[in-house]
Image 1: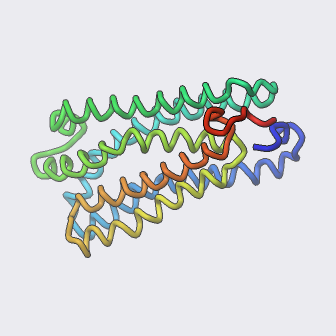
Image 2: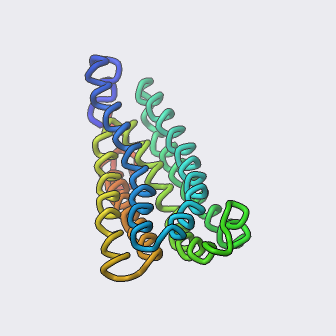
Length: 230
């Protein structure tokens, strides 16, 4: 970000237009994953498939909440540092948030894999849908660390003054999921596993786009040879 003081000098209306609209769109886009999966799974697998994805959804929401815990915290620290002009150690805050989010995802994976079907039954899985929930969940959980890291990075990127970039990253992943669901479920006949693979593919691409942003920021002085530009 070239000018760290624009939040204090720019008109409120322009700031709302720049930040509020992309942020709202990003939240809507993040909901598309579950909505799209439900639509295509319902048509391609059936109502039991919808029930199976519904069982996994609360676990992904927990991961989403943890990623926001780290992401929004780092975004707040980033904004305060920029406002004060204390930019030397920003990369440490960003790095701590990213690592915290990633390892929280690892913990979620460990709990989900070790607890297994017992966790799914506690959430609401039944004998009729537990096999589908297991097949769907084991694939979704594998991407949790990177998916959570991507969500954390999106919050930090917005605080850096690039909300449209964060929105574009999430939109790209959602589009891949929308295209991948019918291809995997119907064309490749992968069933509920296809929906899961399409979802994590979209999440992985979004992660790569957000990670690429780091190369153009001042958060990694070792890589760029510079500190934050204010």
